[in-house]
Structure formats: structure tokens, C-alpha cells
Length: 144
Image (cartoon, rainbow, N blue to C red):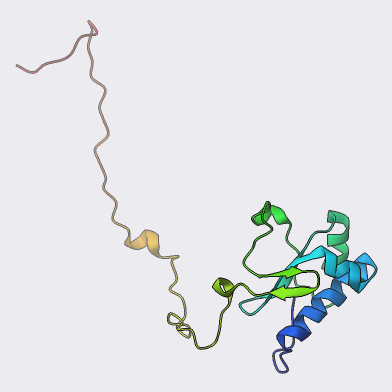
């Protein structure tokens, strides 16, 4: 989901927005809380919910929703895609997936190198093509 950059909401406000967004297609906030199984408010902003494909198309059209991905892209059996767990309307933090501004980043402000020139710089080991050997008897040719 997308949130304003200039007035970034708190984590709780983001979670509330997830619940309200899903409630628009499932009928109530209580039902939405039952269907959401994970939330993310740090590295990326979004939530995971167990809903039908038909409902996912409705969610996709709601304000603030950037995209909807099916669970087939995730760890389906464990409903695990890196966010915090969301059980009975409560966020259960998973520290291994939390990002804080104090964590070191690897060259965060430096642009990533472009790899579109890789073919120009790759060294290619070219070999001579194998020449078929003529042998009338089907045996091995030997030089004298």
C-alpha cells in the first residue's frame, strides 16, 4: 500500500489502514482482522490476507493499493512473506524481519551498477569446431 511521504503514519495507523481497506471488500473490520495474517510497516508497507481471487481484484481497485500478489509467490503453507504476524487483530513482531534506520546499509545512496554492458566485457573462450573424421571402415583414424 502507498502512504504519503510527507506525513508518514505511525505503524498502528498503517495497520488500521490495512484493516479498513480490507473491510471494504469483506464487509466489516472484524472480518478483515480475521482474514489478515501478516502486516509490514517498515521495509515495505502492505499486508497478507486470506481472500478469494475475486475479492483480490476488488482490493486492487481500492485507493492506496499499489498491487495485489497471489500467495503462489510466497511461502504458501506457512503464509510467510517476511512481515510481522497478525493474529486476532494484534501485531506479533518478528524481529528478524524488522528494519530500523540505525541498521547499517550497504552503500544505500550510491546508485546500483548497470549490468547491460556485461557482454562487452565478458571474456569468451572460443574453441575450434570439431572436424568430423572420415573413416571408410568405421574404425579409428591414426596418424603414422
